[in-house]
Length: 418
Image (tube, rainbow, N blue to C red; front, side, top):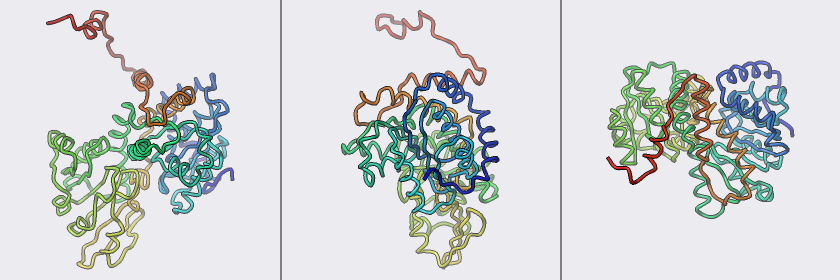
């Protein structure tokens, strides 16, 4: 199977949307031009499990320009943009296996279709591809020399594998690059999550009580944007330092059981399981809107909510109404999956420019260094992070100062006092 997409006739529209995204991805475009000349990925097979969006398409084009043989599947059943998938197949001759709304069986069939291409390097968004290679498809694991991971959730899973000494090849944690999580997680997730919630509901944020579950980089961005739209933001946390930071940033902080009673909107961004549970759903007021912008839909205990409900119906696209026996209704957005991709288009391309520049440069680095790297989760080399930040500033027409020789000497010396 060379591809499995919804409809190749959508390719024309997809191509135009990819071009639009490319216009705001200057760093990745510069990398693509260099790759076209140098071919640093020549002949390498790369299997990618990512959100199939316009920005991802730009990354796939960059990898192919570098000489790689690329295959791509979706890292979330609801995140695929079908016209983009069609364009990559028809116009770029890239093997894509992704259909928006695919069921669980198809989702895993598509991951296996990428594995069938016998990748030498993996590019993951949540570590599903890595997990299946290590479990169900271990006969091909010796072919894989290295990989990258883009999400907080995936990095957590992979570090657990490394700690248990079951990780069979080195992986670079692209998610942990400063030019990724400082910007993608904060500004990208913040804006795109609000975009998805508003598109799905068409409800006013101003004057509402908006509960952000988790105050990591994604939570920081979401809380910032919800407040910017006039929401009264409550943060729930389990980490005392992070909770203190949220307080110092001016947000109300309280346990979920207390927040559940007053919230109008709830959105989880933790990477953990069952953040909003049965005891919380039981306390929510009529009309509460619940969403998730963490990688997997396990953050919402929808099984327990289903047990509480006497009936369910899709009241509008991406909004499922759960009717309780006591007359209350709770609305779940996007089946609890990433709402910024289920109901919207994901992160803006200018943010993904840095994230995917990291992906491209890290896979180049991995190809060059894979044989010398330990079987572990490795940080993004600082020189890559810094180079991307510099390129981004150049693309924005911004110049900064440099340290003088005297300043460098002062910072590196212990003999110079006050």
